[in-house]
Length: 458
Image (cartoon, rainbow, N blue to C red; front, side, top):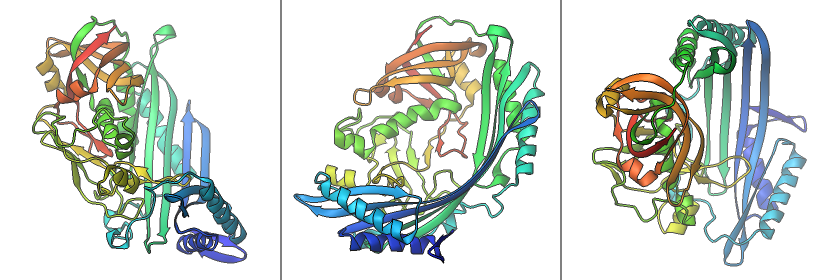
């Protein structure tokens, strides 16, 4: 977390403060800074041979400045990796000049001091594996184990890619309202894509796992075998009957449906008038008994964070409770537009302003697995992958390409490839019945779901 500038080592906190000071000298009324220092490495193998090896080290800063303007304020964002003292001054001056040319925005601005989070690091969340780094030889060995495990599955003829990787990112935030915070997070993962069949009847599928701590990962052998088994199961697909059928969204893809709900309750979409859940606060949108709870403070969680991108505290909050929409997902700007309070959901990249975004999400579980859901629907379609999408965010009109398996007599019978599903999101989410197989290692832990109201085009 050090950078040589003019012969002096500057850590990320000092760098953030220097950029804040440069922005104020340039004429900003308010400013905030994010400094991101990252290291990442990955190795890929194919055919038992090393195919690629990469390592990257980056250090970048993002600056947002807010200036006085007619009717309120205006803002601009810049980012850069040249972090010498002269470059910081130039970055700040450029940002202020851009802001003075930007249109007035009555909703931009930093948080009030008394609203800021008292948590200023991620120590309680255990997001950084103390032994996160792996040397290239170890990464290659892991990738080879993945490949061999996939090839050991009868019917797999080739592995197109097997890779192992790790990364570490340190984030430091500083704002003119007095907020200073920093935390680091690591990630290790392995994934493999297998191919089965021959000629024009080839199929492929994959498995990929990633964790904050490497000790929490399944073995490369488990991941490789899973990829091989998924691939072989897709061989010799058939065309199913077309029409209106009950559908099971496998846990692998079920989060995409709930993601459309989260997108529709995003404050920016609501404020723009482009959400199919506008004016639905307090209304039942999911079946009774189903909750969607945001949990940003899960130790080692994929999307855990001690505070949001505007320095506001993180807390467990329901989005949907007993099927009823209880809140929108808001940052400061969208909250001000809607006459509400921020829900502490600001996210931000280095080159843009904050916007609303969710952290870890947990959905109420049912009491049966995929096989039980198949018995429940009797006849229908089990979706294991999607291909493309056509979603109208305002009306909720839904159309997606899909692949999976046909269910007949309560049993999974044969693979299905490249069909189309069409429906309307409001009716779809109101009909869901959850299974019990959510993967709690994911940011969005959503189980397999029965969904009614879809038409299958074969």
